[in-house]
Length: 358
Image (cartoon, rainbow, N blue to C red; front, side, top):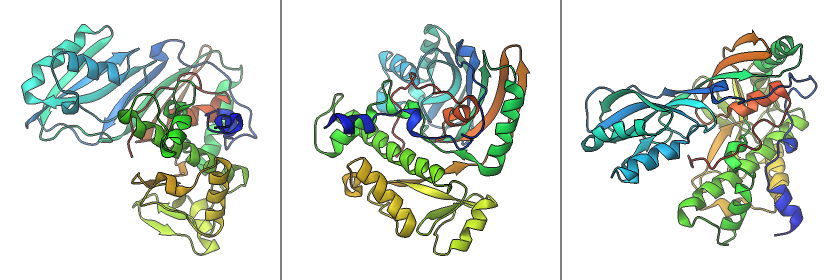
């Protein structure tokens, strides 16, 4: 691998423009304290109170979800028996559900032997909690040391985002602490060995797929196509989830009304190259990263919204910045919204290996 390609495959926010780049940011600092970044999992379903699996709602501080899983493994639970819906930030206070077979229900108490862990609630349900079994996450975030006019600036940026949407970039958590998971993904799809063995190969390929998506999204923003559609796009309806191929330029009006948005390919055997203008952008990004879509043929593939509607945001001024609360759908990264506001390289040094949800 050349030094130039290594550089291209390494995640940096500077490669991916914000959609509000014409507006100044608020500045500020995140995560001065773990309590400055709170995440509450919004479950896809509520445990029914009976069934073959025990559920626990757990609050953790300054720990990874992996730390919780390993604590249960040390108590004798097999890792494959443990269910989580997603991996939550370490440098934060987070709440999420975990599941184990009923025979291990008493072992949830062992989690409270970990520092900064509380079991808030227990229940039962008929199935193991699966990866992706969540509606989304609720974030409550405090921005400190912001600029003097930060509150007013944030209001202006949020108003623009309500109109055009939030770029659905994959955040730095997807790419590892040094932003290099996609480098290892490139090696995997070219048959090279990587650290971590078979278990991590899927993670690394997922990071590479995500980097391709980020570059495609950047090209749409740079080309003034972020809130529009081009021929060859596969668009998705926000209300029903229906997907259709864009064959008429007039469909762009539906995107401007936020009825639909373009989707971007996480390439795999079920997601191949698009045609027309959309396909030209895909070819350009793949060539830039020295890839072809067939390198992802071992993966199922999926399509990802290029942008997300900004729902209700509760914004409050604080003594040295502001506090905001908002919800995001499953798979979306809060760092993409925060970066639009702060105009800084949000969490670029906080990347952690994330679970593969493809």
